[in-house]
Image (cartoon, rainbow, N blue to C red; front, side, top):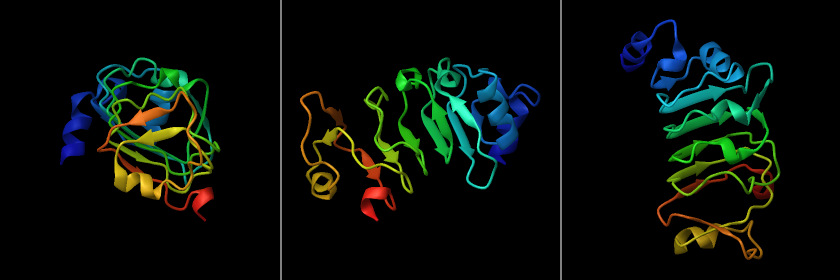
Length: 162
């Protein structure tokens, strides 16, 4: 029922909706860089579909995006254009070997990069329970990035954990 209500906001202009999840519409918005500040949540899963690259510029105008799920999506470009208000980031099958240093993570509450190629990252957190599980981190660089102490991180089935 919720999806129906959101779809009815703008049936023929998905970039004006608050949430995007329908594959064709979401892909069209991203490919044509039509994202706006009205989009709060976006989900795209390419696991069983033909792989297409999405440019990071597609997220440039999505200033209020808080929930982003990009499963098995290949992204190219600089991650500094990612919305800084992101609270939940899910990128199953992330293809890079490390988390980009310019990915804004200040406001993240949940980071899920399961089934990815992640081998290393320069992140630390102040949560002691999480630090026990961070076997990817051998030494922190001087300019390490901090996650909030209440950030949930999931790296299950990633390259380093297998």
